[in-house]
Image (cartoon, rainbow, N blue to C red):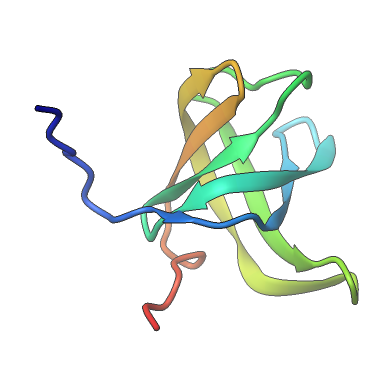
Length: 98
């Protein structure tokens, strides 16, 4: 039996996220899931940042091209073939429970 050791429950949701690397380069990708502690970004066929690399993430409303939530710094904590797992460094990006 697998025991989930996560601090924050994940929500399977697809959102558009702008990820910015320390070099200043950025790209818009989609989430697979998100929680108060972090998120998983789908980076299929894109260069993946290394575990431990710091990035900035921003949630955008693509229909209006506006920022929905403040940007947040995150660190890459997991890599897999579909993408990367990020852990938020500060909690500006945390989701409210409905």
